[in-house]
Length: 514
Length: 53
Image (cartoon, rainbow over all chains, first blue to last red; front, side):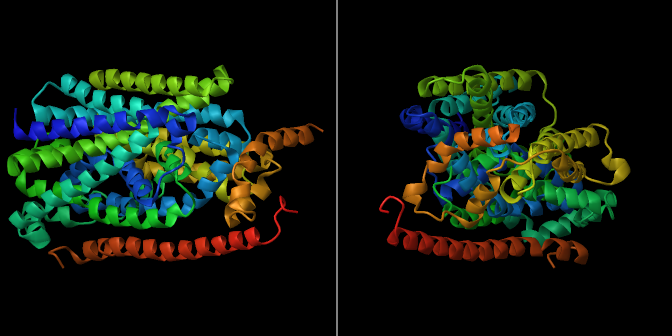
């Protein structure tokens, strides 16, 4: 067996050990299995949030765009580099407090309780499941492609091995296994790409040397407007490219759940610093590797294979193994989080909410495990038979999720006027606009990025829908607590609001009916 | 700079510095908020609580 395959095998076994290590703790309660007992510190919160957010797209779609469009591709990276800072500072503290007050364990349950509407939970679950699946299919396809290159096995066999490991440790160890493997994988991702980029720059004469050689191939690669200046003056497209990854994360259920699992609101400030530093080290580098491929691999057939091909042609042996482990780390850290979230939605937001309201803790942990397994199996089957481009599928699913949920999540912690009608309108208008814009390729006619179009429609949906609904009566007091922090000793206050919330809801409904 | 066209350089170079600067600013702001909150909780703990009457 080749040395790179051995390195990778050891890495996969390590991930399985983490899953087994956390399995006993995960089985203790649903809170432990789904949110890790809300015990995560700043470093783990930051790295799990970022490695979950940075998917196989960063190693396949991102470098492919850089390879095809040159420096224009970095517009996506510039937004991405600040995504965690925006996400943590806008939602972090307030969503942590609000989710505990409401006693919500899943981001969709959170929306239902915040806006007091089962319809939000149904619509939210349907949108989440469909597009989280779209997102995870793309990760599985990327996993199959990378492992095919690494091991020489056929695509379907490689896919089964990669996804088999992800499902095993996620099902066994639950949320804690996911976040701790994400933490490890976040470190491997940075070390892998930065290490290879340093070797690349040494060979190409630094960034200046690289740009000089790119200009000899085609000077328009160095333009901020794309190859052959394809996007010149299209600020609606550029703004959408920056916004999708800078604010879009606030709409991804598997990312916003990280706010809910933090140890306390004090975790946010440290997490911002860790995430900002990690981002500046990591986010730009895969794109820079894409630029290197313009010079080093001018005849590359599949642009999404830029990094695996660079690894094997120019950095063989142990370096290739580290880089491909980093690729797999990005894919796995996103896939496990999405699977975990899909399983949570299926078990808690659908099974517990609408099928068996009295399910015991043990039964719920088992149902969650079965849901994750089922989500993984369906994902594998689709990924084997329908392998579209990773880049297109990720941007599409990401965009629809972001456009559906970002405005409702932000409104949930800031707006006293937002209500269930406004949220439903925002979710549906944002998501549907993105789907129409992408499928009808309206960007080419309007010069407006699908994410920007969806964002505008989602905000309008919220503004138009709000006058037709009523906010929960208790929300003003809760929002004040969420804004100002606890004004009674934490030891006394903890869990009291959570216990009282169902009663408060009933009283509110009673008053409404009078 | 770095053999890039001037517009590319000035549109792209400031971003990492902007994000890092914003992160430090937010860290300090949130630290102050946390400390103020901590003081509020301590004051409430030291005063009369509903349990002690």
